Length: 415
Image (cartoon, rainbow, N blue to C red; front, side, top):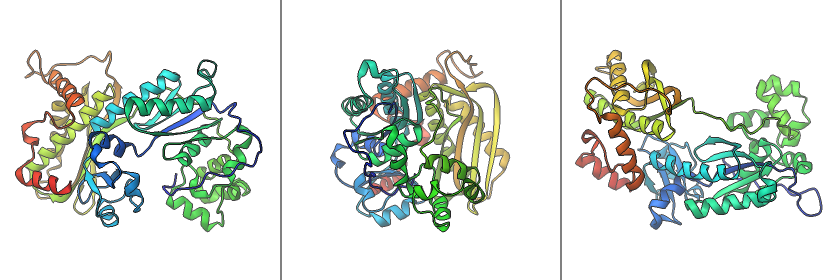
């Protein structure tokens, strides 16, 4: 959906709002990564804050105060700093985001077992089985908003409708900290009043194509022959035509497993020192393995992505005999993959590490390393996880990842 803000369409029906049948909820946290970060920095409430990496990284999230200056997620950090030079920049804490997400999903699953997470900060819920017990869909949505705020300390927005597509649009229009209900009989008029850029799945490029065809509103799409849309946009054109009539047969699917977990980093200055590359690979392996453990999964395949200074990119992977979520095993594997590239004189712009071929950790047999004592690396990783959950990220780290004096100075300047 476009990052621009759109007004909620006016109701074409008269009389009180009837939420009967609006049993599909889309719940979306407001500026999630920024909101979670502010839980640890309450003194920054009410001022522009950007969550992101270094000068060549991108914005992960921004508070609504920063968004007023035009800062958006996925924007290059350099551009974000130009738009909002007074913003406080804070590096992301992915372990904390995963921890808070688990708490939010627990709130959802206390309402209904039919929860389909889309990411850490949003999910579809089918509350049809909870209406008799908990009240109308509107009552349930408002209860979710209040519970998330009281238990977790952040706000969320809720869209309620009879289909996933309309519920998703409604939650976006409800932001921040609101709820929009779209009765089934009003769904078509609701959707067709919107500009094409408000449709779920329409990005800047697709929007340009639609505008170039003279299609400015969803009603325009609805009254365009589906064959015309398909010629211009392929299968997406067919989907948009269905959405324009508020048709979406997809059910809420509670079983949804990530296909991979990982981490990457774009460096402010290209790396050309192999020891520094290994140091960065260790940091990425640590983040990747921690994310796997937080999702209770293990990976069969370790993947390394390297982007060089000329923007050429290579990816290498290795499948292990036994799935893993151990930092040391992931690190050892990506180091071997890196050595096989023989990039002795190449300058590196980006490194990425991923675990793929995920399986549930519970019930998966583990194999100890030959050099591992009785209480070894797997136990050490879990002890670190417990410390991070209690005291925050960075409280326990490998010695080689402790910042140098120069890095600490740069970090303080960024704050």
